[in-house]
Length: 264
Ligand SMILES: O=C(O)[C@H](O)[C@@H](O)[C@H](O)[C@H](O)COP(=O)(O)O
Image (cartoon, rainbow, N blue to C red; front, side, top):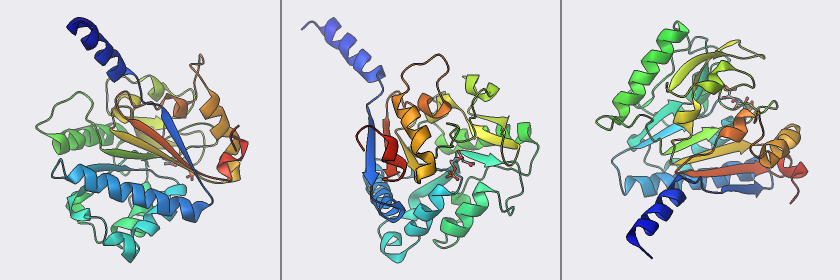
């Protein structure tokens, strides 16, 4: 094979997203344990190559079980949290102690129990003016990746959830934020719950080394099937557009959420 052809094939294969992996666990508890194990292995493997791990937490209610599991002694002793920088994929525009704050949930379930130092936690300032908060967070991300000035920094692992309308992070169907191709973080709005949000954008999320979706419960069965079956439709659901160009996409789902999948 000529050098030119092998280079061409390498380039093509490098630009094709890796296949998505769906891992079905019996229930929420088994899912939390499995994801904790995956996170521990990912952190261990990353720290063999780099001095720190940059991890993005998801909001919503699903990840709370995972965060509480990670705070348990048997997991706390397995993970070197002193080498982990925590970021948030999105935030509601509320104060950090508001019951709807994604930061407040992670603080209660993970950060405080593990005594993770404040300087390791990059909080999205939900209490600030949204444009200012978005710009500040973009600067925070770029500082955390310096001197690497890649246009879209590659987080080592990003956790995401799935809304029953197909949204993920705070990227909601029909939102202008879905079209953002330049910025890392933008203000946006939600049709449900807290209206004003901040969210990481598709280019940043899809730059990740690994993206892990956490989906549990029978209420997500229908939307999970739609997302898995959607192929290049004219208006794909936001969660369907999460396809790390040079990374892994893994769906951790429980049996209830997977009940509508063809292989279920
Ligand atoms: O701020 C948020 O709410 C999340 O970023 C959002 O994308 C969440 O992951 C989904 O809405 C699923 O939420 P549940 O886990 O509560 O079902």
